[in-house]
Structure formats: C-alpha cells, structure tokens
Image 1 (cartoon, rainbow, N blue to C red):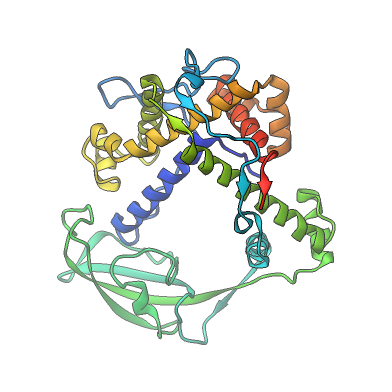
Image 2 (cartoon, rainbow, N blue to C red; image 1 turned 30 degrees about the vertical axis):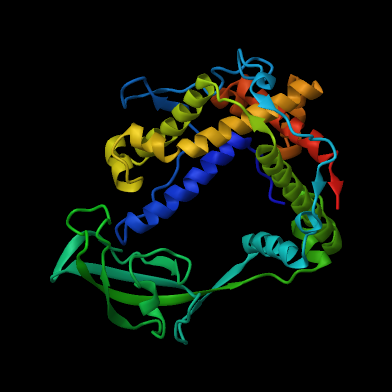
Amino acid sequence: MIKQIKLPVMMLLITAILFTFTACTDSNKEEGDKDVTTGGAQETTRSEGEDSLVFFNYSEGITDDGFWKDIKALDYVKLCEYIKISVPDEVHTITDDAVMYEIDSILSYYADYEEITDRAIVDGDTVNIDYVGSINGKEFSGGNTQGEGTEVTIGVTSYIDDFLEQLIGHKPGEKFDVEVTFPTNYGVEDLNGKDAVFAVTVNYILETKLPELSDQFVKDNLTAEYGWTDLQGMKDAIRDDLKRVALENFVQSYMLENSTVNSLPDTMIKYQEDSIIGYFEEYAQYNGMEYKDFITTYLDVSSNEELLEEYRENNEQMVAMFLILQAVAEDAKISVTNDDVSAYFIEYEGTSDYSPYEEIYGLPYLKLLVLNQEVINHIVENVTLS
C-alpha cells in the first residue's frame, strides 16, 4: 500500500471533520474559485475566551509515557471482554474487487492521460472547461476561469445545481450557455438564490490510460517502494493490508459499543474541543480569511459555541475511545518506549527519524499515538475469526 503515517483516533476524527468540511465548501464556494486547501500540520488553537491564534500544544495533558495526565482510565471505564473477540467472516474476508480497487489506485500514479476532442461528453467523463458567469447580464466575481481551464468530473465534482450534467452531449470546441440557480444559503449575499448564466467552452475530454499490469511492471516500478517483486505478491500483500485494516476498525467499534464509559473527564473534553477549534483557525489563517468569516461561510456556524455543539457528539465519542484504549493499556500492562516510537515510524514511514513529527506534536503525543496502536495490535492479535 502507499506509505503513509498511521494516525491515532484523534487524527482520524480530524479526517472525518475535513470530509464534512470539504463537502460543505464544495456546496458553498463560488464557481471558478479554487478549493480551499490545507496547509501543514500547525499547532494553533484559540486562547480562552477569544478567537485569537495561539500555539496549541498537542502534548499538553499527556504524560511522558503517552498516558492522559492524572487520569486512571479504569476508574471511568468498565471494559468488555477484549480477548478473543469474535470477528464475522464478512468483516475479514477481502474480495477480489476490493483488492483491484487498491491496485487501480496505485496504477493511477503511473497513468497516461489523453486529450480527446472527437466525441460527445458522457456521464462520468473528466472534462476541461472554461466559463464566465453572469447574473442579469453582469459578470460576477469568482465566476470566471480566466481562460486557464478547469477540470471537472461529471457525477463526482460538486458544482451548484445541475451545472455539470448540462455538459453531457456537447463536444470539445463547442460554446454554449449553462443556466443554474445558486442555493439560497450559498454563503455569498450577492449570489444567494440568484439565477445565473455561465458561458461555457469545452476544451477537451480527459481520458486516463492505466499501464498494463504484469509481473514486469511490478518489478520495474513497485519493488523499491513496496518490496513487491511480482503481481501475485502484490495482490497478497494488499489483501493482507486490507484485512488488517478491517480487523482494526472492527475491534475499535466493538470496544466502543460493548465497553461502558461512566463519565468523561472535563480535561479531555476541553483538549478535544481546543484541538478542533485550533484546526479550523489554522485552516482559516492559511487561506487568508478571518476566522469568524471562515466558520460562517464554510461551517455555517457563527461562534465557537455553535461549532462545539455541532461536534459535541464526535468529541464525546473520541474521548470515550481514548479512555477505552488507555483502560486496556492499564489492564494489560501495555507501555511504550522511545524505541517503540522509532519502530513505529520505521514500519509506517520507512525511517526511524521521527524528529519532524516530534517538533510539531511533541514526544508525549507520539507516545500516545504508538500506545493506541499497540493496544489495537494486542486486541487484533487475539481475535477469533469466525
């Protein structure tokens, strides 16, 4: 599989937030505007009672051993039986289609692209277009590609109304109008609920040509990165990876559903809240926006209080998961050392030098990350496959 750092549950929550946020921005942004993009992982969050940016310490409230400071998780959690959890066959049986989906994803990095100009657009096509948007004959800000072209995929890319569906049946070189209506809650006062006309030019259809999959392709292109030497070895390794991920996801859900969390420490709730607000504050700063404008436009909330209420259930679930994982560590006497952190980064990043991550997150947070993974490993290695 493509190498990437495996993140603990808190960072997986950030991924979930980002997914929700991306869907929100896709529906709210002006046509022709570039997507809001994330910057590097920064340590920013709010100061108490205000929206100004200050540094957020990811390791604050975490001990040097990777446990939550001054918290004995077993005082808060009644653990379910976590040894020999029964995992249904449909969870850990990986289909050939699932394997091929991953293979196609890898092959896409080696794909060639061909610009097609001699056929009509069909649903699912990726198309390069230009457009100029106007309302009542007057061009509006942000609705012009400036002749630079933009790529969209019908049925995948999110544009307002049925903008992209109106491209179907047209051919490259054609110029025509697309008529749409902006949503009433689009987020831009001059555009909310307005009818607009986009003068569209289709430049070309972009077709993807994947390379031929063979033993030789794997040997020439994937051995150095993944260690695979032939096609069968590639398939077997991907199947094993997918099975492992399925088992890890299952046991985490199982533990959350079957353990009893009696209460949630206020300090852990606040940590989670600050990390989320800090994430969006950094996001806004990176994109040159005022934080309040950002959350109003893209998150549809007017204050931190509304934002936290929006994510209250997620925050509580994440804190519960942290408590459960630490409770297992306490019960099973699991601990981690600096050597374990190095081993973790060797396995998932191919290097023992975790200093760039330590600079951003701090060593206690990295210990928490590795401790969570060790707990999950312990549970997975003892499951019963049914």
